[in-house]
Length: 357
Image 1 (cartoon, rainbow, N blue to C red):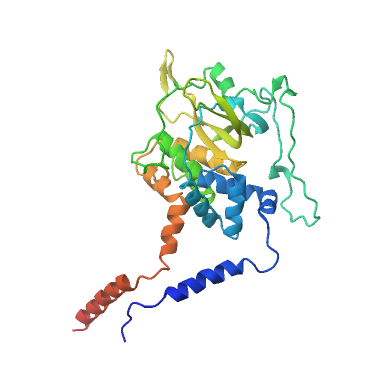
Image 2 (cartoon, rainbow, N blue to C red):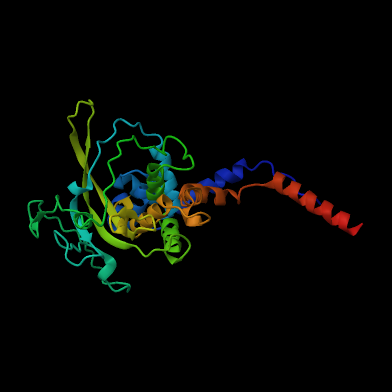
């Protein structure tokens, strides 16, 4: 017998939704504050991918999604779309960041020193059932010097390369950045669109494509991490557009500057061609170092594309790292496709019948 579209499924759908809501009530319910305290890294990823810096709302989304990363991002983005945009912040400079962690893999001695901060990089990957909880956060006064520098005024490692003439700073671009939360990305994309898409991208997807790029499916250069910064970045607004900015708070950021040897587009000098360094850039909400590093790799790859290479194709990369887009499309495959499949089934039966004649 042939299959037909199912009717009267409304009650079943309502029962399914009710069952899902009741499912989370089994056992002891975790409050939002507990999620914030004990799932800090998950909160960081959700805020980054949802483009909304609010730990309370991110924790609420994680709890409601039962820890499902993609669902939590979907919930937070949906909520974000309902919020009015009252102000735009002024241009912020990460040189003003109050640094809590700062490491360089390129130089051992850097101005201001290496600041290890709180990181799992130096721990053994063993389950710890001791029950001891330590946030690891160390708050220091901004006036405490780090090798003669204030923690909210540390110089950049790239300054050293610039002083030696090994890095050429690009002129400042005051063009208003494109906002992909208000309009769809257009290809070829602008750099502001690329950076927004990458910082909103699913952490695993951005990491995987960055890894593929390094392994040989793109520019294939091993990046040297000039500097990883994690800290509190001050944010200001100018509500009256009179040049008088007001401080409204800090956001935790991870910033990465990756050094890449120039890829053949060397600049001419009196002695011939001269090798220099270029930079791949990564910036995310929260402490999210792996993603920020992978982002810097893809930023460089997309800014210096190689024809025919997937990780240099902005449409391929940017449309496929978005967790909401990809999860939504894949998930929709389990929803009713009765009519379309019936059409395919009829064609298959028809070709089979023609072959047997």
